[in-house]
Image (cartoon, rainbow, N blue to C red; front, side, top):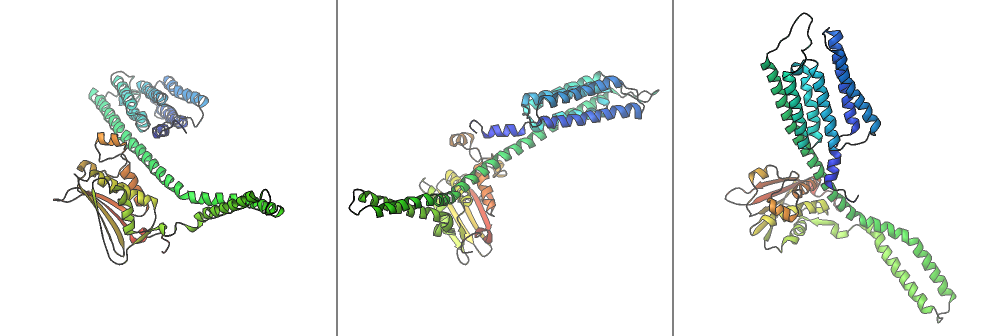
Length: 435
């Protein structure tokens, strides 16, 4: 896996498969052939059918060549995909040249290759294909064979109509380029952010599984250790107490006993749980997320207020990570103080983390919690190595525990940001040993 980064995976995931382009082109070949045959023999319009099928045949030959050259699962690099989509634009332009130019209703199909490119190729390549489509449309506006029509009747449309079709195709292609590229880019970024979240969860899960692996190793080592103990016992019986190897045998017997004790502890890890450390009261949970940030020159105040007994939850690495990330952000932006308030009743458990910093810019606040959105400045974010994924991962992990998160700016005259995390009490206490 060395040498592969998240960008590499993202780029490979968006690359077009050869099979996808081949299937789409066969669909185009079938549609174009049907349109030509219906126009010529169904409607009786006189059109250059030989030249039309020559254009259609070029697409069919290209498909056959691609099928022979590449395996079905092959993904094309950006250059090859751009060239193939460019061919589709030129092939359609040649067919439209023979059948009326831009006033042919099928000229709208210029949008198809542009849309495919916008969803799967870099923006600059899509712009190149857009310009090629506009260039072909411009040529077809002024130079083309007449639109096939009923014999004995002439159809002459004003130039203004052709120009209007050109504008419509241009505007439609530009809109599709911007919209589809933006949607595809957001989907790719979201997929990358979710992969990062899954990586955090996998690491936490890996740590939680180490005790089970240790227990399995202890069970596997138990059999050879029993054999060693048996051999030591037999050798002790066969040698006199004051013999030359008596001290060595006693030492071996002691070490076998130590090994048995160690393996016994390892075997109990996967069965006994973490005992009292497996559960956290709400006050201990808050102290655990606040403790790592108490030595950075920012005071952290904790306030608890609730009805009835204090809630107790099962230790949850995702919950600890999410709350810790929010607390870290509050300490980073606070001027002098962070306040963590916890409240509860019979239905809900709520934790509010507030700082006295400058708050969140309004244009960022509306998107806060989305992937690759950060409250830090560009220089600060680059210095910290941040990608704008911290709050997204924290929000995702907390929501997996059943919480609802909300981040707002403090109402005037107060300053700073407030992050509210609220659970239904049943979700907060779910999985605890005493529940």
